[in-house]
Length: 368
Image (cartoon, rainbow, N blue to C red; front, side):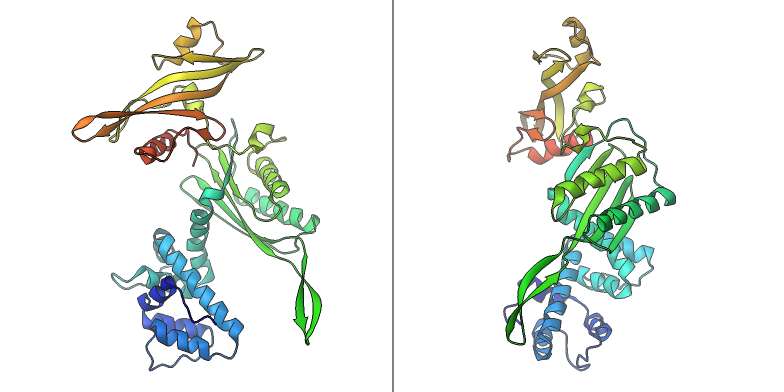
């Protein structure tokens, strides 16, 4: 075992209640000395004393794992505590709380772990927008979806085993899919001779559906393209009642302009933004090329009438929005942002980026 343990693991061990760490080792059927403190130095010595180096590595990785949950999923640890009625001490550390949830049950810890996965995958998710659909989530459709996913991986030769967890929270539906991938081979030493060993890698995929904006977000491991497309197809046919998935849905969509087109976008600002002005719209009409309109008002419908354009037949290619960001004791700072779906924006790392992104997210232009 490496003698150079990470600072985060040292901090974790020193932050967890001693009794909880000893209970952890007891669950592992390991005889940690009852009269010995559970600080990082003593725990390292104990793990180094184990004859099974693979086991000591496994424990070290598991403690790292619990530490990550403590760092990134505190809110969901609290939900697990309430849902599973887990007793805690007042003002205890996040590390102790994470260990309590871990020791309680696999189900309780999975609740926090699934949120951790979402945080971990959030920047790697692909986003797929459905239009004019209504979702049906119930025991029958969820069970049918699980079975279809299992059948797909079994029939594609990837895995006989597929474990799927599903839960809902605040109009979002989460599916965590643990499954196998194609068999792989590698060289190993066996009885001092090199031999070929075969194994099936385990993968963990995530599907999140936001019922508010009808966006399906995916994180798919392995040879992802075929699996991603299949997930979208199975989701659409099972939960949304679709016979066929629109080709545009398969594209990775981060931005949409529908709130501007249908008039639901709020130009009035908030506590950080004085106002927003729609300064340019680029549209494309059926049978014609793109038309660029420089606008001086937010009433796009009236503007379309002036130019003889059919509002419903126009596709919005891109828009420019000018944000007036409030500054204490100063005039508001103007920041113009060009937005071009499915995923392009001129917004750079600069003052006001987070404020603008939050505003676009609140108005359902930025989908995540």
